[in-house]
Image 1 (cartoon, rainbow, N blue to C red):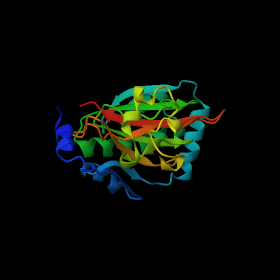
Image 2: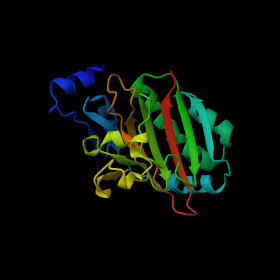
Image 3: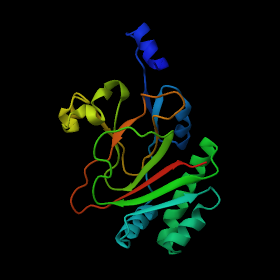
Length: 225
């Protein structure tokens, strides 16, 4: 029997609180270490030169996903080897390198697993939780990640618990107003099921449907070592 189950049996009225931390400063990302925080969101406005670079990058590439191992000191070099040294790649790589440096410093990592994906359809269309410690997510272009408040979610309806029903009618949440959504450019840290002893409270999230003809650019960073 898990500790969480034992506590709930002793005190069934006990409520586990998990909440977002949202600010327009990058320092908000450190709030992920707060016990009751399961998502931190740095709301940022992308500069025009980066917006243009992202659009040109998407338009010039046919490959859908690139997976790389990077460190704070090698990100720019690794991305240049993969995508070339054009001004477009440089602008995008400069921004990614900053995020890698922040991610690795925050979690004391030597390297991070980088995935840069051009999406023409939802990558994970059903609400789910990830069995990882934590993931950085940012959408450079297109509709961004959707997520649910822990205390407005019936987690028994995840996976097979939905009985084959769509998320919107499975009972996972009460109504569509309960769905939160990141904005293009936002940088978010999402706690997973393997964050310390927080099993059962990892952030519930999904990729939103992509409009026909739209191409998204999604960056994720994961723990390696």
